Amino acid sequence: MAQNKVHINIVFIGHVDAGKSTTVGRLLYDTKNIDEQAMRKLKEKAEELGKGGFEFAFVMDNLKEERERGVTIDLAHKKFETPKYYFTIIDAPGHKDFIKNMITGASQADAAVLVVAVTDEVLQPQTKEHVFLAKTLGVQQLIVVINKMDMVKYDQAKFTKMKDLVTGLIKSVGYKPENVPFLPLASLVGENVAKKSDKFPWYTGGCLLETMDKLNPPEKPTHLPLRLPIQDVYNITGIGVVPVGRVESGKMKIGDKIIVVPGREGKGVPGEVKSIEMHHEQMTEALPGDNIGFNVRGIGKKDIARGDVLGHIDSPPTVATEFTAQIVVLNHPSVITVGYTPVFHIHTAQVACQITEIVKKLNPATGEVLQEHPDFIKNGDAAIVKIKPMQPLVIERQKDIPQMARFAVRDSGATVAAGMCIDLVKK
Image 1 (spheres, one colour):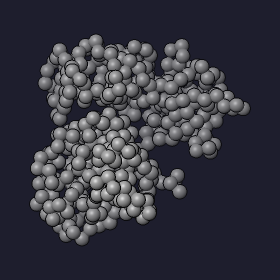
Image 2 (tube, helix red, strand yellow):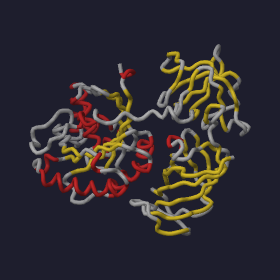
Image 3 (cartoon, helix red, strand yellow):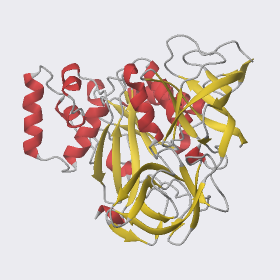
Image 4 (cartoon, helix red, strand yellow):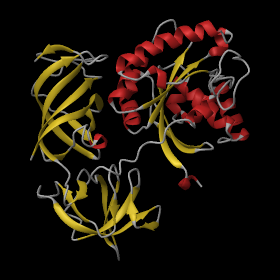
């Protein structure tokens, strides 16, 4: 049934105690995506752990440690249908230790729901960081939920005050406030989540469920060149070599002449598409967002690997010998200087890359230049840097194929930065 609906990835972001998990849990419960019995068990479990009132959060916070600490650590994915769309809800951690999971979540999302608590006097630092990241990682659509309205007796003035604070923030990173809906919510008691509440006579918009159905479907970039990053390569008896991956842009049809780059020799491996399959069904063409397995004439199992990218032979994916990127430093133990060589995660590739030049430091909120050629950059800084991959790497410019331009930078198990490619030198 969900196959016929448009699919949207939506990430819930915001500070650690704003009520993201509770909002998601309440939404799933009120729309009958979780049954009474399962909910009763979660409620008993919450009370037993001395966390009464956390039962809705427990829907998403599956890990034992999360339940005991009352914070979301890993990304939880839940499928969820509204009358109009088929959503994958990504509940991202607000806790700063877990920001790397939030980056993974945001970089997969088409839209974000920012949850803030009306009871906060000021904007929390995480709230700012999440909004900035969402924008840097290309999340175009935003819904703002002002939660815990029951704790201020549904007071419109308190709602307006928080709305003004958040409006200033989202405007500073480049969202247009006039396109962003602001909703009052009381998730724990279920006001305005899945149905319109009568507690806000002064509020004229829809509930969260209705607002999610008003999101625009993500544009399928079929007009762009074909790019399909390889996730895995299987050898299936009777069929042969079957690469698997998700189409990021363009279209792939049976009979297409394609090339996979860089490939084992770094020269690219040409072939012809023989068959395409999704969810065990044969297809004649694959479009952006489709996770497919396919069979290619002329390509052996050892020729290609995870991190290679497939394109049409007449517009092959770009292999960069160096590239220029706009990055944000999130979580580095000291400072980043020229010569630093962490691992870049770009589409399905993981490649060590060296920072060869820090071109300029930017104001993370406005993008204005603060300093030319600084000696180092540190947490919270945004910068333009030049980067040299240590082995052949496919990446595209943000203005050409944005789907292939974003990346996260990891070092010894943590995400230290995120960014996007703005220019490159072709191999």
